[in-house]
Length: 279
Image (tube, rainbow, N blue to C red; front, top):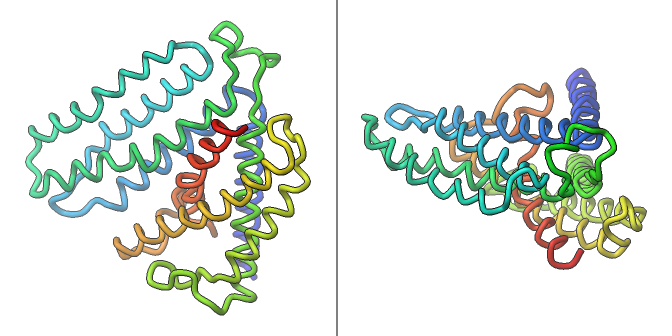
C-alpha cells in the first residue's frame, strides 16, 4: 500500500509538472523538454559506463543540448533552418576527440556516446516543431504569442492513458505474455486494454486543441499504443542487457527519466510524421 501511495503521489507530481510546463508558456515548454532530454541522456551515460568503456559524457551532453536549442530556435523562427547544418560537425568532432583518449574499447565508447543523440535527442527535438509558431525572438518572452502546445499535451495525455491502463490491466488480468524474453511483465491483455482505453479517450478529442479531428486523434491513439509499447520494450531490452531494474531513482515509484519517458522516444517521431503528412 505504501509503495502504491508513493507511486501515485509521484505520478501526480509528474503530470502537473510536465503538462503545466508544456502548456503554460513557450519558455516553460522549452525548459520542460530540456529537463527531460538532459535527465534521460545523463541516465543513459551513467548506466552504460563500465571499466574500459567510458562514453564522452560532457561532449555528448553538450551536443544534445545544442541540438535541442537549435531545433527550438528554428521552430520559433529565431534562427533560419539552414543553421541546423551546424550539427553535421558534431559527430565527426566527437569521433576525432576519441583519438586523444586512452580507452580499451574506443569504438564501444563512441557508440554509446553517439547513440543517445539518435535515441533521445532527435525525438525530443521534434517537440518544439509541434508547438512553436514562427514568432521570433521579439515576442518569444511574451504571453500573448501564437503558441499552440496542444498537440504535445494531447499526445502526452494519450500516452499516459495507454501506459496506465496497460499497467493496471496487465497486473489484474494479464495471462498471456507479450514478449517475455524482453519484459516478463508485459501481457497481451495489458496491451489490448491500453489500446482500447486510449482510443476511447481520443474519441472525445474532436478538433481539440484545434489541430486534429476525431478520427485523426483515433489514428494517433493507435500509433501511440503500438509504438509506445515498442518504446517501453526497447528500454526494457536496454536494462536487461545491462542487468539493472531501473534507469534511475529520481522519481520514487517510477524509476528514472528513461523509465518514465521511454515510450515518448519511440512513439513521438511516428506521431509527428503522421501529423506532418496528414494533419
